[in-house]
Length: 108
Image (cartoon, rainbow, N blue to C red; front, top):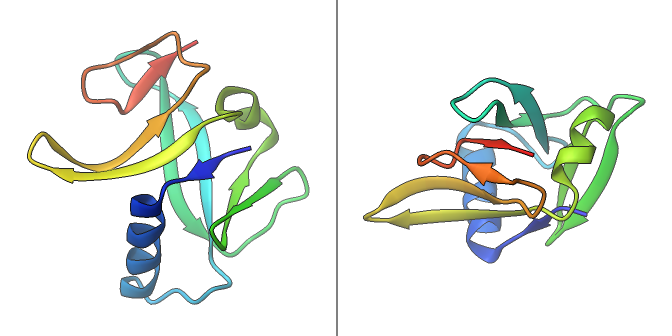
Protein backbone atom coordinates (compact mmCIF):
# COMPACT_ATOMS: atom_id res chain seq x y z
CA UNK A 1 0.00 0.00 0.00
CA UNK A 2 1.13 3.54 -0.71
CA UNK A 3 -0.37 6.27 1.45
CA UNK A 4 -0.79 9.96 0.66
CA UNK A 5 -0.69 12.63 3.35
CA UNK A 6 -3.23 15.45 3.36
CA UNK A 7 -0.59 17.94 2.16
CA UNK A 8 0.45 15.68 -0.71
CA UNK A 9 -3.20 15.11 -1.65
CA UNK A 10 -3.84 18.84 -1.81
CA UNK A 11 -0.73 19.50 -3.91
CA UNK A 12 -1.41 16.59 -6.30
CA UNK A 13 -4.98 17.80 -6.83
CA UNK A 14 -3.77 21.34 -7.50
CA UNK A 15 -1.03 20.22 -9.91
CA UNK A 16 -3.34 17.90 -11.82
CA UNK A 17 -5.75 20.77 -12.36
CA UNK A 18 -3.00 23.28 -13.25
CA UNK A 19 -1.58 20.88 -15.83
CA UNK A 20 -5.02 20.54 -17.44
CA UNK A 21 -5.59 16.91 -16.47
CA UNK A 22 -8.99 15.64 -15.41
CA UNK A 23 -9.78 12.93 -12.87
CA UNK A 24 -8.92 10.19 -15.41
CA UNK A 25 -5.26 11.00 -14.82
CA UNK A 26 -3.79 8.98 -11.97
CA UNK A 27 -0.52 9.40 -10.14
CA UNK A 28 2.20 7.02 -11.31
CA UNK A 29 5.03 6.31 -8.87
CA UNK A 30 8.01 4.32 -10.05
CA UNK A 31 11.62 3.60 -9.19
CA UNK A 32 14.47 4.01 -11.66
CA UNK A 33 18.19 3.46 -11.41
CA UNK A 34 20.23 6.61 -10.79
CA UNK A 35 20.89 9.32 -8.27
CA UNK A 36 23.67 9.41 -5.71
CA UNK A 37 22.23 6.47 -3.73
CA UNK A 38 21.49 4.19 -6.69
CA UNK A 39 17.69 4.38 -7.04
CA UNK A 40 15.44 7.36 -7.80
CA UNK A 41 11.73 8.02 -7.43
CA UNK A 42 9.69 9.10 -10.43
CA UNK A 43 6.31 10.78 -9.97
CA UNK A 44 4.08 11.62 -12.95
CA UNK A 45 0.45 11.90 -14.01
CA UNK A 46 -0.70 9.10 -16.28
CA UNK A 47 -4.01 8.18 -17.91
CA UNK A 48 -2.78 4.80 -19.16
CA UNK A 49 -3.23 1.64 -17.14
CA UNK A 50 -0.73 -1.10 -17.93
CA UNK A 51 -1.47 -4.78 -17.42
CA UNK A 52 1.24 -5.19 -14.76
CA UNK A 53 0.20 -2.10 -12.75
CA UNK A 54 -0.90 -2.39 -9.15
CA UNK A 55 -3.49 0.24 -8.20
CA UNK A 56 -3.73 1.82 -4.77
CA UNK A 57 -6.23 4.46 -3.77
CA UNK A 58 -5.92 6.90 -0.89
CA UNK A 59 -7.96 10.03 -0.27
CA UNK A 60 -9.64 9.63 -3.67
CA UNK A 61 -6.36 9.61 -5.64
CA UNK A 62 -5.38 6.46 -7.52
CA UNK A 63 -1.70 5.60 -7.43
CA UNK A 64 -0.31 3.33 -10.16
CA UNK A 65 2.84 1.30 -9.49
CA UNK A 66 4.51 -1.08 -11.94
CA UNK A 67 5.39 -4.58 -10.78
CA UNK A 68 9.15 -3.94 -10.58
CA UNK A 69 8.81 -0.75 -8.53
CA UNK A 70 6.28 -2.26 -6.15
CA UNK A 71 8.95 -4.23 -4.29
CA UNK A 72 10.75 -0.98 -3.42
CA UNK A 73 7.64 1.07 -2.60
CA UNK A 74 5.43 -1.10 -0.37
CA UNK A 75 4.55 0.78 2.79
CA UNK A 76 5.73 4.13 1.43
CA UNK A 77 4.00 7.39 2.35
CA UNK A 78 4.00 10.27 -0.11
CA UNK A 79 4.23 13.66 1.62
CA UNK A 80 4.66 17.25 0.49
CA UNK A 81 6.73 19.89 2.22
CA UNK A 82 6.58 23.57 1.45
CA UNK A 83 8.77 24.83 4.29
CA UNK A 84 11.95 26.86 4.24
CA UNK A 85 14.17 23.77 4.36
CA UNK A 86 12.87 22.34 1.16
CA UNK A 87 9.88 22.29 -1.10
CA UNK A 88 8.52 19.31 -2.91
CA UNK A 89 7.27 15.78 -2.64
CA UNK A 90 8.96 13.50 -0.16
CA UNK A 91 8.87 9.72 -0.01
CA UNK A 92 8.86 8.19 3.46
CA UNK A 93 10.01 4.72 2.52
CA UNK A 94 10.47 2.03 5.21
CA UNK A 95 12.35 -0.13 2.67
CA UNK A 96 15.17 2.37 2.15
CA UNK A 97 18.37 1.55 4.02
CA UNK A 98 19.76 5.01 3.22
CA UNK A 99 18.72 8.13 1.36
CA UNK A 100 20.75 10.95 -0.11
CA UNK A 101 20.73 14.42 1.41
CA UNK A 102 18.23 15.79 -1.09
CA UNK A 103 15.84 12.87 -0.53
CA UNK A 104 15.46 12.14 -4.24
CA UNK A 105 17.39 8.88 -4.27
CA UNK A 106 17.72 5.89 -1.98
CA UNK A 107 19.25 2.44 -1.55
CA UNK A 108 17.84 -0.80 -0.18
